[in-house]
Length: 454
Image (tube, rainbow, N blue to C red; front, side, top):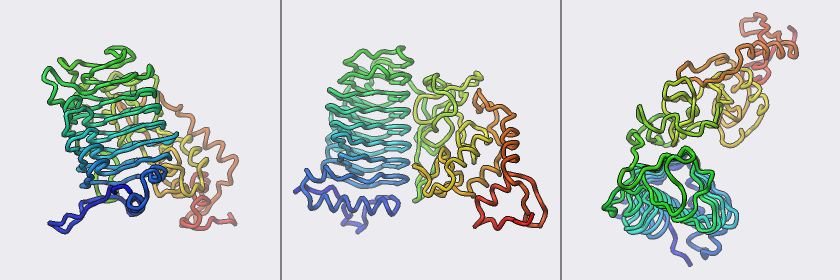
């Protein structure tokens, strides 16, 4: 039998440490803990843990692995828009411990793992073992975690044999470990790749001759580019200036010029917690220093804000390095394709997903047409689009490339020719606005019947 990783009661205060999560997430976690109590480890490893989304996991402890969460799986697990903080373990994974086997995957996205700790081990933020799976950390902040041992990986410790591990558009900063405060990687026969990721301003108190942010014991994939690494030891060919990488040395580490871990905007979790981030400061070498081949529209940053904006004011939009896009703003309501303009293309996107219930994963994302974020695509989302039609983000934030201004007129022409636009409004007047007519039909149960005699 295995010793369960479980939440413990505080006997002194008769209070349970906080495991903030939405109700469904908490119930599923309880099921997993019960399995851990009664099933041998070989069977537990075959259990598929549930995805965690919009959760706050805080104030927990474990005697060995995974103070906040322990996910060992042959299946696929997602941790999205989640705050994992103030957890501790004796040995590994103060925040979270993961192991992926036989083709499974663990994906962290748009989450913050902060201020977790280990007493003697490593991976204070994340301890990740990718045996033969595919693991990734994307658009995520890992900050302020402290590993109490003498090894590396205060922020993240990654082990792998034949798996694939990637870090993309992630910020790893202000973590502490004996030898490499930010990241310690050993992927022996697998693949490890870095993409537009920050590993800088971490702390390594055992290193007396400088500051060591990362140690790479194994090969880094040749595709790794446009990263900012304050300092590192490499056992592979990976150097400053190649493929857009900025890499300092332990003696002269590079400074990313990041602000403190704070509320820089973005989603608020159901319990009221805010997923904190580090934003680049004015003049930061991260601004407009990412891959120039990434063009708008693109995915959002960790906060859900626009990517690929003109942050340095040179009139050319370019993605930043790290989890937060400098000088960006939240997407306009109804801007489904994230091109900073609410136009006919966003209508077509909504129409293509119309009647999806639930909306395609992840719920509420602009790219699936759920413009009001209620988890389904219906006429109410159309009304959001119609109410914000022709809105756009002003320069200098706006992208360098725009859709032609004639596009809305062209869409109107097509719709008016193919759609009966005569409707009766609430005051009895007749209108020929096809967008209102379409909204009435799409949202009939909530808006009211359309006049069939007109």
